[in-house]
Amino acid sequence: MSNTCISCKSVYKIFGDNAPKLFKESNGIVDPNYFQSEGCIVGVNNASFEVDNGEILVIMGLSGSGKSTLLRCISRLTEPTAGQIILDGHDMLSLSPKELIEIRREKMGMVFQNFALLPHKTVLENIAFPLQVKGINTKDSINKALEMTELVGLKGRENYFPRELSGGQQQRVGIARSLAVEPGIWFLDEPFSALDPLIRKEMQDEFIRLQSVLNKTILFVTHDFDEALRLADRIAIMKEGVIEQLDTPANIVLNPATDYIKKFTQDVPREKVLKIEDVMFKNNIDSKVSISISKDDLIEKVAEKILSCDTAVNVVDPKNNNVVGSIDAQKIIKVIFSENKQH
Image (cartoon, rainbow, N blue to C red):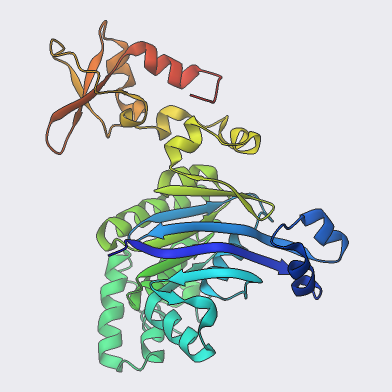
């Protein structure tokens, strides 16, 4: 059985009255400059990728790169110009309006930058609202809403109105509301960008905690590279509608595919991003070495220990305590301070 939850093949979104005709003439080779000269804007240009069940794919890029457009195409809030989108076995582009509504209600949770809370309803009523839309009775929907309120750390504020909450608390209500319907797939479009840095960090921590409990398939849009590195299993970096690179955070930092990606990564403090596993010498093991560290440790956490050793240090897998590699001070220095971004 396939572990793929979302599959996109050659997805395009071109805005403009002339778009269908121009696209047909292009044979799939879309030149954004030419299309712009003809009065069209290319939002997504030939996007193909897959997302596994339980994976967090962060889509990032600067403003206007196409990241939110791609997310909206996958959920069909925006109608793609061409391509194929399979979501949990459903061909999204062949669904009727009624089927689409049903899929959104049953399968998808959505959180946007704008909290979009109903101002005249309490926290509890806001969270229960999508359940009641689905036809779930008041008692059951309120019980579920209470459960969600506790999950996102808002216990005690069930009867507050949105105006009585901070920005971070309002966003927690939005998250709880999207989770109440128990979606398998969760779409988040810049959900924390309106929050101040401290609250944003707290919400990222909360997001990581929730995912460890819920194990959702998540598409998360952001323009913040630090946020992407912190949250993602894989990152897709977009520029002018094109996915420039889709890879793990470690590979994007260590092996940027284009000059554009290199610029994105050049100021990243690698020791805060990379794990020992990402840079160790694999299967290079010295049985005489007694000091060991975990492959899952961030470099930042163990750099001092490695740098203070005259010899290499063994790297172990904490799951079974087996030695899986080694690392030495020279490697750490090279990774942290090397100006060469290609390894």
